[in-house]
Length: 247
Image (cartoon, rainbow, N blue to C red; front, side):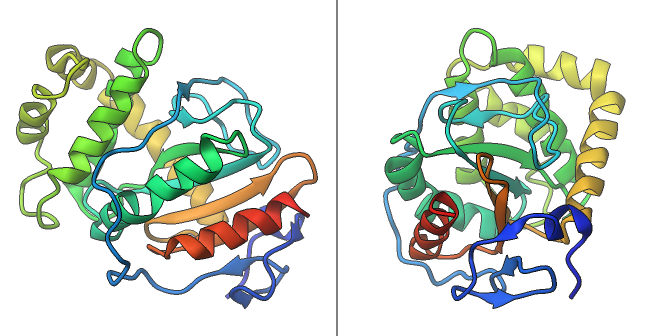
């Protein structure tokens, strides 16, 4: 498998953990559903917004960012609300990453939609953008409550659970999120938001990302990066973050 030029330009730092690919970047294997259970309580850190484009050429506009804006390591996280492996990562691994690396100021997590599993995946992705637009200025933590609730309420892929009507019904039960405002945003801005999401997906494809969950860890100070794919256990992320940090 070839790694596109945006990755090959960057120094690889994850060798020895996974499979080394052309250009020196790393990809871990397929998603797993055998990770041990952790806390179901949604651990969080402060959320921020940014209009910058990172050195890895990720446009942050419109994306929720968890963790300090000056954290040295970016974790770009592509997900689909219908993806069961994303749900497993969110419930088992992400809380540990937040406690050990985000809350300490080492990592900031950039949430990016990659709705590839069906038509309603795009519906959920557009709603995600509308929720963030509504809450990002005054109550950004409300996004995290909504985001976590959507994965908690996840149904079977393409079963209809992610229809607009059902997602809005779930949204009505999330503190701090105005479902009516979200609905209005979707009616008014859906085409514009879908175009932005499709642009993000095309950008991700340049990194060899074809499914979810997928991650790129990027040390902005030294321009070093590595890629992980699948619902990998926490230890893989911990080791990868340490290597990127020490590059």
